[in-house]
Amino acid sequence: MKERAWFRPRTLRGRFVLIMLLGVLGAQVTSYSLWSWQQDRERLAQLDSLSRNLAESLAATVRYFRSLPYEYRHIVLDQLRDMGGTRFFVSVNDHRIALEPTDGGRARELVAGNLREGLERELGRRELYIGFSQPEDLKVFNNEVPLTELPAHWANHSLAMAPLSTPILVVQMPLEADSWLYVATTLPIAGLLDGPTWLSGDRLFVSLAVLLTVVGLSLLGIRWLTRPLSVLARAARRLGDDLESPPLAERGPRELRDTAAAFNRMSERIRRQVDERERLFSAISHDLKTPITRLRLRAEMLADSRQREAFVRTLDELDQLVKGALASVKGLDLHERTEPVDLDALVATLVDELAIFGETIGVQGSAGMIEAKPLALKRCLGNLLENAVFYGERVEVSLDREAGTAQVTFSDDGPGIPVDQRERVFEPFVRLEPSRSRHTGGSGLGLSIARHIAHAHGGDIGLDQAPAGGLRVVLRLPC
Image (cartoon, rainbow, N blue to C red; front, side, top):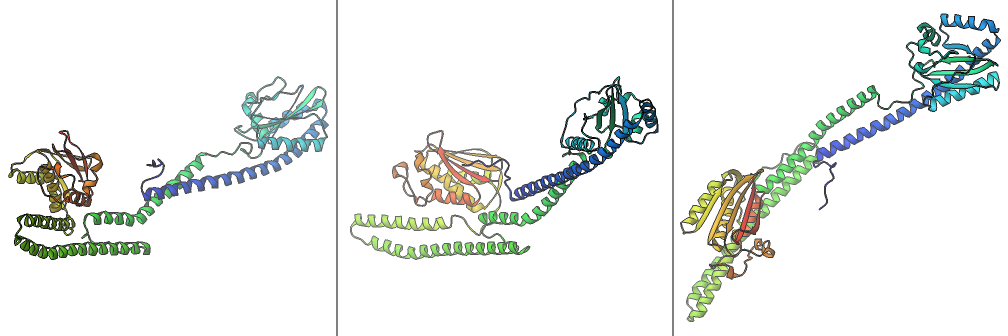
């Protein structure tokens, strides 16, 4: 038997919800992938344009400082720092300042490439160093003073940003043999150098909100759509227990109305066929009784006593078979209604009836109340009890109830039934070797009718070996 996958729900409603959930998740993942890809393209296009414009501004700044006399450079730099608003922090150092290494990426490579290309085009090919640094790691002067230790208005005014949190672009190139121009700047739009974030707080919130909304609406809609199927399933189970159950209401969408109508037609055909079968067997039984009676009267007039006894014995067997066939058809009263039945009291009544004939039967345990057809259930229990008494000297009956199931066990000390014959004895008219019995008679219908009644109640009957060596019959019925 193949094991059911753990992720596959048992109910149709659960499978619908799983499909909706996977569909929504797939749609969200796909849409966010496309959206992030488009955002990344737009971000890189924006960086490409900004970095090309920035290269032109940096080239103009370099040309301006190269044109200043050496003694005026520091005066101009101090004025620029105090005035602010240039978006460039500029210094002239006597050596190139090493930058702390940072993680790269497509955006930074694009900016650095465009800057190098633009500066070389505007200024000619020359020694050029381009890098990125975090504000807290950036050093700006000869003595490598960190940017964070400068007066706040110097950094914030010059870079036109407060607080400083975005990566800072640094360009260094030699002016003369002993001086290096140092230019630090930030991009005008913060966050362009940061990589795309998949699970930002707002995206996650929107995703969860959409997912919960879709799942909630799906549950309501699927419950509304699958409710008629649940009604149909209950009606089918009820029909198995009671053929006189009321028909289904034919309402709702066209497909459901057609299904309910087909179910009602099927129920009606089953009832007619079962009633017809019962009438047929009743007619056959009635029609056979008359010729059997005539044959019995004629047999009594036979002169040879041996032939008379053999003829009468054959007629008795034929009469018993006819009665057994009719009994098998009427094994379950189709027109009987289910009602609460005290299983303990019913078993006690049957035991008392057999105790009159001197049978020894022990009873223990309790099974309580169940919903059943009283007469049919009494016949089922009576057949099992009589069968146990028929083949055993001592019979024990135990009643139990657990996990929504009532159980009645009949144990005898008779000859038992071989394992390979235990299913065969439930077939109609099957009797094992006569030597098993200490009596005579029987048509082999008792166990067949009993199982038929048990199945009609949603239960079953099983056979096993009793502790005393005989047969143990277990009747299980749903409570």
